[in-house]
Length: 196
Image (cartoon, helix red, strand yellow):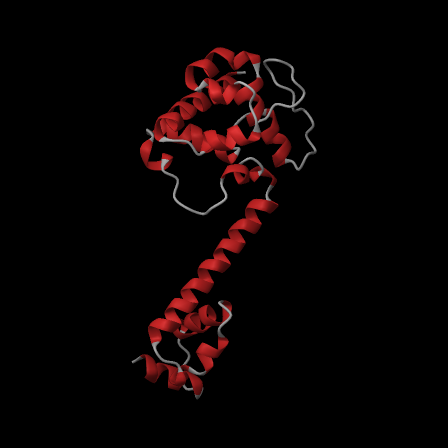
């Protein structure tokens, strides 16, 4: 059936949207040769593997470009280096999962999120609780005195004593128990900023 539609398409007798989609996929993946020389190409599994790999690689490039271009992804790209499923999405309860996801993606009420959204036009990035000049995720997780006690409750001492970007990355990529506690802490932080 495919060969018949393909031949009708080539001689201009029939134009199939489905066939045009296949042509677009092959050409977009950098393989127009596969479209124009179908009769000579064997085996088909080899072609499928090449096209699949190239489409996957193109998608990864687009994903990396979008993450690096988007100011809202500033913190997200710090610890999300690979496009893969995050275990916390299945391990945590809904409210914890939502809080951690909001925190990771910058979808929260911290002063810095508005600044990122406006492209740096909004300059009010002061912390509402300690008057620090720059209130971002790192500040509230590790530095803000207002969250000192919850920090001790939810995080291991290793993370908040002499904190660093490396420790933050490690925390966001930690085991199930630490991720669960991080999610509870993020939920607490987000609720305080929503109420303020």
